[in-house]
Amino acid sequence: MTAAVWLALAIYAVLGIAVAAASRRRLGEGAGEFYLAGRRVGGVVSALSYGATTYSAFMMVGLVGLTYAGGVGALGFELIYLSGLGLVVIFGPRFWLVGQRFGYMTPSAMLGDRYASASLAAITALACCVFLVPYSAVQLMGIGYLLSGVSGGAIPFPVGIVIGAGFTLAWALVAGLRSVLWTDVLQVTIMLVTSLIAVAFVIAALGGPGSFIATVEAERGAWLSLPGPGLFRFETFMALTLPWFFFSISNPQVSQRLYTTASLGAMRTMIAGFLVLGFVYTMVSIVFGFSALALLPELDNPDLATAELISSQVIPTSVSVVLIVGIIAAAVSTVDSILLTLAAMVSHDVYRPWSARGARGTREVLAAKLVVVILAVIAVAFASLRLDLISILSVAASIGLLVTVPTIIGAFFWRRGTAAGAITSILVTGLAVIGMQLGGLKPLGIAPAFWSAGLSTLLFVGVSLLTRRRDGDRAHAFIDELRTRLDEHNIR
View 1: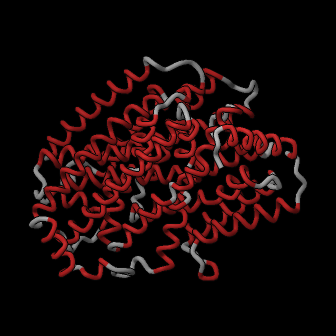
View 2: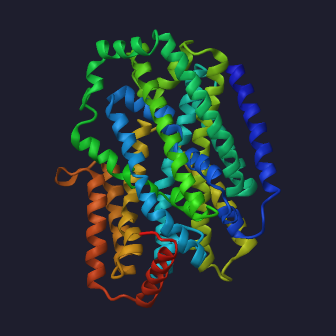
View 3: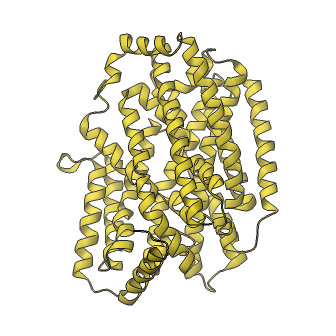
């Protein structure tokens, strides 16, 4: 199979490069083109790209592993994320309207402008880097585990990581978001079609849907209820799902996409399309996890469930090889989106304001490309550590990003919020959460996710009430302008 995998990867690379190169022909000048594809993205492309960006190695590697380890609680965990898309219904039009009115390139730029603080924009950008570079590394780990597992070690784990990073750099650097968008369309098509075909073969190997369900009920009945074998105790389940619910506004690689659609109608198409795609891919991953549990019940590492299932010959080799490429594509699409967004935030909100000449245009884009390369190298180094359980590490990144949620909500709905409150909330809570996660600490027996949400809210509100607003005029202009435009579009 190893030779076939290498051939499939080569074909994938050629197709991806061709798509990225074609997208470059439509690339205009300026940072807005590179970061946001000129704010002219249609609804269908947005939906497919949103799905590719969100669903990564976490799904067909991480969620499969989480199902293998914890059972049906993994389905509830992922459905919480889909329900959190309701936040996009509320915040999506608001992001889009202020982005159109004030020309924001990044979520951190929006916060810096709303609270009249360049320091807040820079701190938000750097905080996102701290939490999202490890999340990017998790995707590269998924690729490494997959290629190493299906090849029996012939493709070493570090080589898999480097392959993933190479694809990421190629897609992100050729034409910025435009190349990411069109390669996402290719990648999400591959990952969805191949996963559906593969799960059909797996179910057939178990004797069909009825026999599959009967086997799981008879042999792994505990996995069909909560807390299952013990992983999904109530506190653990809530701690995992809380950051997942706010993912759509706390993760900048997702919220930045809310600036890119050509219209509010295109945004509605994006949301509807993503809900369908997300539900289908979620169910495929859950069924894959239970299938692995039925066919391969004694795995030591749940994250290897997909790789072992592919290697078991249950799925025809031709389908397995394309499925491998589909899973890699899912991971790559997430990493290139994250690194491009982080590069935009660092170059636009850290480098440009503080550079000697206020870098703009070509210089800013060049800085962003350099940041993409640097962050990719850091992600590769982090992935090489091989930390355990991809799904848990993915949530850990979102726990850190929860610290930005009160500031984001306050930007749209609370005039009294101040830059001091926002900065204190993000910095203090961010450092506290890092300490808790590195030390495995649960102060007062409370999980870091609850500390992240609660402490950041308390500090944002408390410090805002104790400090004077330097941004009073700006806050009024931002919110009043938003309300006017919401009324124009009959949005409540």
